[in-house]
Amino acid sequence: MIRSLLNWRSFLALVAIVIVTATIFYSRYLARKIAMDERQKVDTWVAASKAILKNPGMDLTLPNLIRNDQQSIPIIETNEHDSITEYLNLDSGEIARDSNYLYRQLKKFKAENYPVEVRLSEKPYIANRYYYGHTTLLDEVRYYPLIQLFIVTLFIFFTLYSITIRNKATQNQLWAGMAKETAHQLGTPVSSLEGWVEMLKESDLDPRTVQEIQKDVDRLKLVSDRFGKIGSKPVLEERDLVVQIRNMMEYIRKRAAGKVQFILQGPDATSAIIAANAPATPDARGQEHLFARISGPLFDWVIENLLKNALDAMEGKGTITVAIQNLEKEILIDVSDTGKGIAARNLQKVFKPGFTTKKRGWGLGLSLSKRIIEQYHKGQLFVRHSDLGKGTTFRIALRK
Image 1 (cartoon, rainbow, N blue to C red):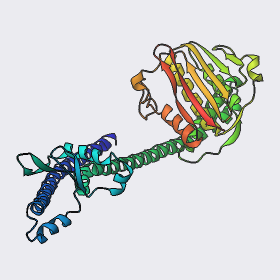
Image 2 (tube, rainbow, N blue to C red):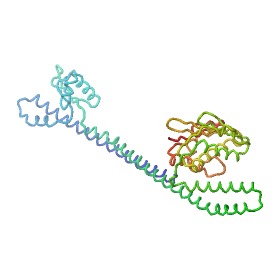
Image 3 (cartoon, helix red, strand yellow):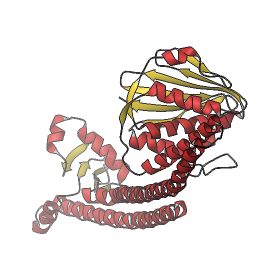
Image 4 (cartoon, rainbow, N blue to C red):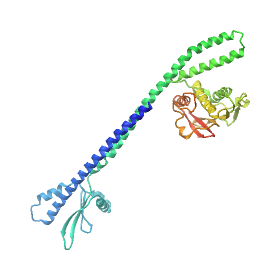
């Protein structure tokens, strides 16, 4: 899919380059042709003016017709000292409002074209000089490639945007289909395991063993339920975020190897330490409640993924801190670890499906977590900051 998108981009870029390059060359050719034609018109107009000046007694019908027919090219007539004596096809209103307008136009015309000179006398030297600009047609031809480049750029942008949206939709359908199929495949063995657990409860097996088996079966049911909710609109309910997060931290803490300390900082700024080898401290149960509309199973999945990633990053030793902030318009949840951090080159890749730095796994946890928060809960999930050798902080932002 990525390779296909790159091929489309390369093809469209090549087409754009060919179109714009050809247009630039052809526009320059047309501009030169129009400029030569305008120069010829000015020469003809000056010749007609010269004929009128030097032959006042002859039939001047044709020279006057030529002079009167020239109504597009702006011209300024000066004497041999470049003092303005006459002008043609310039804005008379602007000339009346601004006394320096004619002189600015004369400076501009001097920079654009060589003047046409008519010598009236050699000794003393008397001459008329005709400086001229260009028509709006020449401007349009010159700027046409830029306009076309802008249009082609917009076309390429919207085409690539459409392709990207289509690919994302296809990808989302694929993930949803895989998730639902996984949930379907898990359903049968989980139901069978529940039946076996009920039989074990009636046997002479140690009740504590049966209880642990029941927990694992319940866990499988929860996993199946999570996968089943992917691709369908989840039901959002008022849940206590503090309780949800604390329960997931306790669940992960029991399965964490090594010396890892878990700290939960509630919205009332109190902290509860959940040790690696002991239950949560008493003050953890008395923390402030904070309710938000979430899908309990899916939100738990996100917290679990973030905590597991933190554990993997610390390799058995360090501190995981979850800080909850209750702001006016949003709730912020920061999951921080003291692990190895994320390299700067990977910060933009961590949420892409398939990206992982671990030897095992498919690299779907963070991608699914981001989708759960942003599509289903209308929030945000991103890397707040990460320092190599110091740790990483992921932030969840939920709108109220």
